[in-house]
Length: 302
Image 1 (cartoon, rainbow, N blue to C red):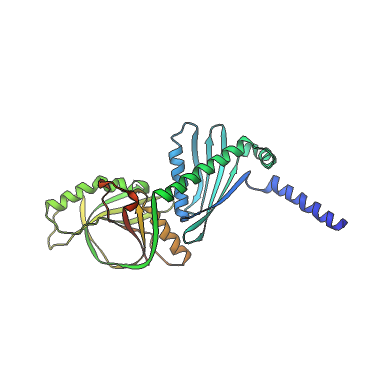
Image 2 (tube, helix red, strand yellow; image 1 turned 180 degrees about the vertical axis):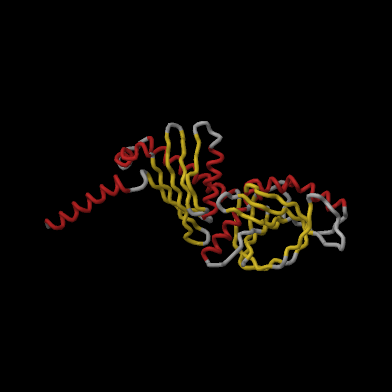
């Protein structure tokens, strides 16, 4: 009996030492979300971006590992919080999120009071995660859908294109709309025959900065002699094996299809090139229900 009590005391003391002095966070939240780690990761970055418009909110990214981990310092109202986000894929369509929150100047006090009292620190910690999670789930339910299709083969395509460099991913749709008229006017002016669906070819995708170099393309039929334009060039997309997904939603967030394919390739040990290709089947200028807009998304298999 004495031995059992002694072991229990030692375990209890060990737990207290761990909880007060070793446990890395003052408050931890864990939850699952039905999307890829990339979409959750990007959601945090966008949540920061939109919240910084509020006077009482500012943030600084301390370090990050693309689609797996992000550590940041947030100033919100009178609080300075260190927030650690970890994203782990647990299936092809589900991510497990762990969020650790610490107020470094009051960490010891928070660890003592949080289990027993409803403190202002706990309230702000819960509010941050709740606001983010509600926004993410609303976006997943109302803004876009991604469906993985499988391995496919892209056929050869000739195209006219405008090349864009070092563009933030969330601005790619804006850039395509900006140059769409210029590309179409050139094609129509020179009576170049082609297809109906514009597409995008990514030449470089920086996973850490989420900046891309890409070609905004329109399918055409090549002739022996093509007209000259300073900004518009011509190319041929060679046939290639690809991973394919179908994205429905506003093309601003069609990169969620990239994240889904990137994660699928990672989980299934498929060696891919991080050079997505998208084909757009709807014209945003016509408006309508965005969830009915369709794009096919591809990642080339090496």
